[in-house]
Image 1: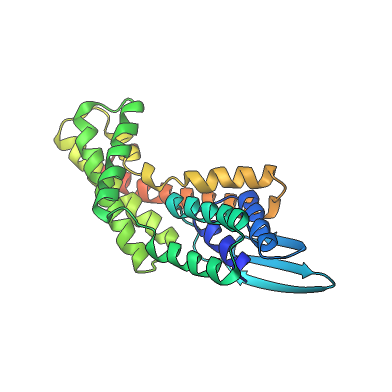
Image 2: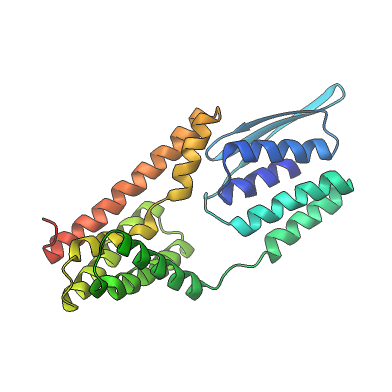
Length: 245
């Protein structure tokens, strides 16, 4: 169960199936298992651990798949400690609980501003003029704030994508018009780049190529669905503003 807890948290931090499989096996073997068989699914993990002639199989539900690189690295370091320092099960369990509880996160306002700056910077790569730079920055920052608030209230992730895409693209397009930008349509698209699921898309490719086609295809379907709802939000804002039609 402890090995699967490592796997669950790694999955929810954005790790690929190969990484999850590798580290779950290392944890189980580090705690004395002689044989480990793991099945990595999109929403669950199943593991069989064997010691001598005995074996046990358990399943574990996996929650929302997000991205948390700091916690991901902390888990990997703990696995290395388990192997080199021969940590006991109780110590490993306590260290894992401490990591989950104490691993710091960036303040929400800082994430909002960083996302806004990232989208505005990408807009320049898309040849958006300087008049639309601040509108894209502000719209993307507001969109990230709204997305964070909605997800905290457990609103469906696909509905969140549509709402945030509509709001961010509408604000960006309207503000760009006021600033007399000549690239309003591209500014509206740039403001929703925060919704593009880059890590899940890469993991989908890694999983398919790494021998986990079922998980990879499930992730690819999720990515495609997010992009569809994103496009709906942008299309609705274009209808309201009369841009890109």
